[in-house]
Length: 513
Ligand SMILES: O=P(O)(O)OC[C@H]1O[C@](O)(CO)[C@@H](O)[C@@H]1O
Image (cartoon, rainbow, N blue to C red; front, side, top):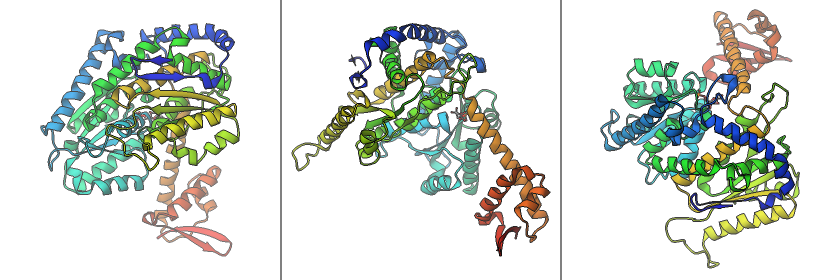
C-alpha cells in the first residue's frame, strides 16, 4: 500500500497473510475500529486508571471532547513555540549568556521520544541548542554528560520532564544538576523548566522556586504516547526542529489510519501482520531494522511503546493471558554483521520490519570506487537482506519513506501508536496502563530503606567487623539475607561509602572505617 500524502509505503507481501486470516479477524477489527472511535471521542479507554486516552487530540485539538482541553492543547503549542523563540533570540538566557545546550532530564516515555527525535532530526552542526540527556540514575552517566558540558553549564537549559512529577531516577538527575549549578555559583532556577502534571511534586517545586517556565502534561496522555505533547515538542523546538511539521505528519497519518478498511489502513494492516505472525499471542518477536543511522533509536522508542502497552498479565476481562510482543533492533546494515545471521539461519521465532528511507542525503553523493554511492549500497543491503530472510520463510514487513523529515517522524510515531492501539483491541487488553512497572519501583524503595538501616548500624559501630548474618539480624532483616549481602558488597566496592570488605580465612566481614 502506498500513501502519497504521507510519502510512505507499506509492503506486507513478505508476511504471506492469507485473505482468509484477515476475513476471520474482521469482526475483531470492527470492534477495534469502534473502540478507537470511542477512544478518540473521549471514552474512558483506560478503565484501570479511570482515564481518557487523548494522544490523537494533541495533533488535532478539534477532536478533543471539551473546550477546556482543546484550549489547553493549542495554548501549550503556542507557549512551546514562544518559549523556544525567546530562547533562540536570547531574550531568555542563562546566567553566562544565551543558551547553547539543552539538558533533558527524564526517563521512559519522558525521555525516549525526545531522544529518538533529537537523533533522527538534529545535527550538532546546526542545532539551535545541542541536546544532552540524563535518562537514568547512573552517576557515572551523569558525570560524563556534566563533564562534557563543563564550562557551558551557565549556558545550558535544563528541561525536567516527569508526568507524575515523582519518578525517582528523574528526581536524582534533577538533584545532581542542581548541585552542579550550585557548585559553579549559578542559580538552577534560572536555567530550568518543568514539564509535568499540574499540582505534582515537580510542578510545586518549579512554582515555589520560580523556574523559568512550566508546561503541562495531562492524565489523558501516557508517557509512551507523549511525543506530540510538550514532552516531545519543547525539546524538539528548542533544538530547532519544526514542530508544526512534525505535528502535521502525525495528523496526516491519523487521517489515513482512521479508516475502517484493513486493506487501506496501514496501522490496521500492521496490527493484522503482528497478529498473524505471532498468532495473537506475541509468539514471534518483532525485529525493527531501519536502514538509517538517524533512526537508530527508533527500535528503542518502539520497544517501550509496544512492550509497555502490550506486555500484560491480564486481559480486559481479568483473565490471565500473559500477552506481549517483544521488540528489538538497532539499524541496518550494521546489524547484518551481528545478529542477522540468526535471523536467516537460526531460530524462526521472529518477523522483521525493514524501514528504508529512499532519499539518502541532501547533498550530492560521493561515488564509491564501484561507481555508485554509499546510499545505493544501503539500499542494496536492505533489499538483499529482505530477500535472503524471506527465502527462508521468515516474515518480512517493509516500510519505505521517501525522505526523513519532521513530517515523516510525526507520521511514523502516529502509525505505530495507532497500530498498538488496534492490536491491543484485537487481543482484548488495556494498552494504556503499566501495572507491572510499579512492582520494581516498590521493591527498590524497600532496598533503599534497608541500605539506610545498614549504614546507621555500620556508623554507630565504626571499626566493628560484621558478618552479613549478624548485620541482617541487627537491622531486623534475617529474611532478606541476600539483599543485605548484595548491599554490603556494593557498598564495599564504592570507597566513598567507607565500608570495607575484610576476608578473614573462610569468612567475610564488613566494617565501617
Ligand atoms: O513521566 P514519569 O511520570 O516520570 O514516568 C516515566 C516513565 O515511567 C513509567 O511510568 C514506567 O516506570 C513509564 O510509563 C513512564 O514513561
